[in-house]
Length: 253
Length: 204
Image (cartoon, rainbow over all chains, first blue to last red; front, side, top):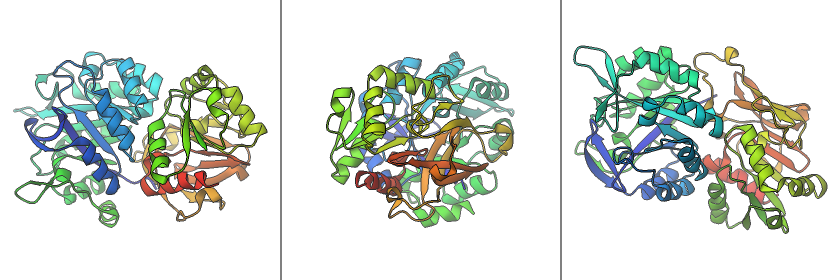
């Protein structure tokens, strides 16, 4: 049977790993390559690495870094950050990355999904949607690391992305990012019925119970988390951690 | 010496790293001349079927590989799209496959999959080993491997199926005919189970 995936999400900022709170105040938590080695040892299901500077600085992905991470990584790797063209996507893909995550570029140019899928296969094209709650209800999508509000109609856009051939959608809650108080279940309930490709939820996990709830009650097959896997204890000491095989199995049933 | 076929498609370095760690001799082959002293072949592959086939044709290695595999019976392991390429053709594309194992590549039927089974089939799933094989020694009966695909290999002869996996239905996850092997999932990204399988192939 297909198991849900529990996915550490690592943010790269100024060549180091950081963890943010509501997309702000990046705190240094270590070296990316070292983190990959630790998650190898812990046999993580998958890794997501997002370069949060690339698009904001309007530069290309850091191919050298991606190459190092991908060749070290013994689990599937999803990379996002700064990919705007099929050529860049192909280059990242050829470095040994299984999945290409797109965000800002797709908002500006949705057909990019189709073009990249034609080259690398639809199964490898991921779109990450950074979502924030509106004051008076509803949700709005942001790009460029939470700096710029977009005008997309979320529901329509999610349907469109699937028509264009996206392989996976990641919903990332800006409000819950780094807060560690649980996932935004309202957002999940609103969005899940619209999605028939694999859906991964990110933002808010503060405990393994949050992940168990996501998998068991909300039937989500991709549970991603940042803080949970890089901090330990109430003082948030930096310590890379991940549930072992037996603990993980308990989360599924 | 194991040759890892580098034709611009697939995660060459991940295989190289694993064989380096295992201390098993390997070399990366990018042209026919690189295949002179090969004793085993790893054929990786990701992306769309036609793109992979076209890249292999462009590399100039196809004829040499045909002769090594079909004539010299050099063991080969095709992985993911590298496995699908072993078939005669694929519903994903129009170019002919290598045709080394009798079968065709089909797309999962979206309508037969329920809400909890989206496409692509993505994540960790278990193998049901059908036939004992040296490729699968030291693996438990239902080892978990990482999958990422929407198409699957349908063998003409069921005897060619070494292991199956369930997603909507049982599909062939490892195929084998003589010294030709193919695996749909990603051993290079499946932690210890994958390393064991690649070690087994290296020791065939």
